[in-house]
Length: 259
Length: 343
Image 1 (spheres, one colour):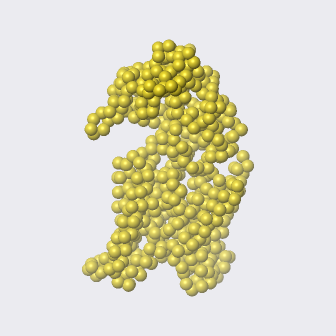
Image 2 (cartoon, rainbow over the protein chains, first blue to last red):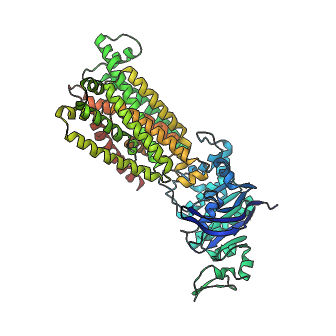
Image 3 (tube, each protein chain N blue to C red):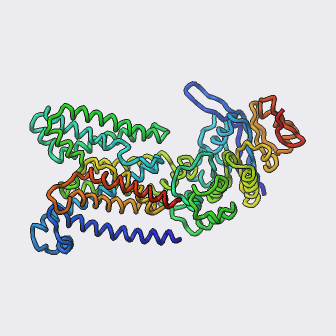
């Protein structure tokens, strides 16, 4: 059965400052459901990160609300939110001696006691997450010894170990080559279908996203649309992403062409 | 889990080493007291010479305990700061607390001549200096905590501490420039650090403060592990970052503040010991790091104190010089050795 995990109700994102409000996107009505891989695309500076920050409760909405499992995301206690929502961020990890296992196991923090002791169940979940992401063989490696592609999988495993309905990833494919991009996309797709998780991630790899995601949220200067990729192709939404006459979207081939 | 076994062995060795060092520390000094006598004296028996017993109970034992407390406190303070600021060069002194203490003590010693004589006698007693440096650290502590509540950026706290240190140092320089040779000497002695001369009641006060700091540090182990992923990940794991930061800053402040007050500004231990612990145990897990930093800190401080006594000689070297003399090469050696192992 498909359940709605997160929905927004006339959400307006943006920043508040002393000079006034800077609205970035208005009247968003988005819906994320279980077993669905949703990608968020749009040009640089269009407000993808602001939207993700608002959805994850880091930033307050200017108007409207974000509901996570029926409750306003800003009403969650930090710990409760951590049990419902996990993230994979773009930022680099600070230097440390963490092994892959330890890094994934940190995902269990919302469930462990005051000193962070892992119970048998915690260890089982960590192993489960590492098997799903096929990184078990890296378990005892230090996190700086593995490749970027592997590290990205480790971070996904960490989010999985956090055992939340919703996982949000901010541009997880950025530093990867084509092979690793595809394998990460496929992994996320597999996870949504096998674990019934709801996954949302932002990316600039539009052609890959079209091929592999269940739904897409497209941010353009005029509007924000959520739909299945094929519908977005047929209604010509992709052509409105970039305000550049040299780039246009070839609907037949499903990718961008440079003139 | 070969690592776990290795860690257990290291812990046992460290624990035993600490006990041995404690006894060595008490045994060595301008008068060398045989181990057997130290042991019987500590376990409540009689030493062969009553002077030995007197020296042990009233001088050596308090000093050894102070060394242990100072080593533990400063090292844990350093560990907390290095993880919070994600900066390997951070130490307990980065918050500017020792500088605050220095300034306050400098004012007391160097400004005493402007005060009525009875007041200057009170202020220049050892209690007066303890009071002055506690006051100095405390004022800085309050400033750090207030500012940290307003600043979003943790790095800004680090920079603020550094700026504050430079500021106080130049202020102290100006004060010393205008002071007499005698005052200058007194201030220099304080600034070189001193583990001895603490009465049992002072040690009690130091013990309580250090324990509060260490306990707060122990309760920060889980948040510190989350912080290994950076602030944003830590938040996403349900960490109340502002509260954690406040607790960590408070713990470090009370450790540094109380230690500087009773033993003077002791350099390098807080910076070096966490690094040695990390290299020795090859881990970032703060649960392991906490205990090994604690033990290593105490052990290294005891070694430094023995070295400063110059066994068999009349002179005693300032403890602050020894901590840097021993600490700096050790860290360099470990880093070079680690580089070799990685290649």
